[in-house]
Amino acid sequence: MEYKKISVREDFIRLDSAMKLAGIVSTGGHAKTVIQNGEVKVNGEVCLLRGKKLKSGDKAEFDGNGFIIE
Image (cartoon, rainbow, N blue to C red):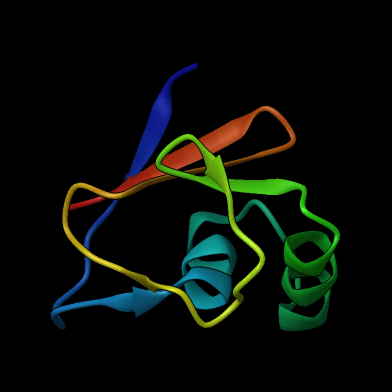
């Protein structure tokens, strides 16, 4: 899988916000649903926390799409 690179200015970005920024979900509500359904992996493990703080180097995957935080 090829990972899209997401640059953030802050120390972290919330998982749901990063998914919207990466364009792999269209709304925050969609992100919330797929995260709570266990469809999203962060660093290879299922993540159920939509407010999970992603930092530089973290990778997330959903539905064949992935992104990495820079």
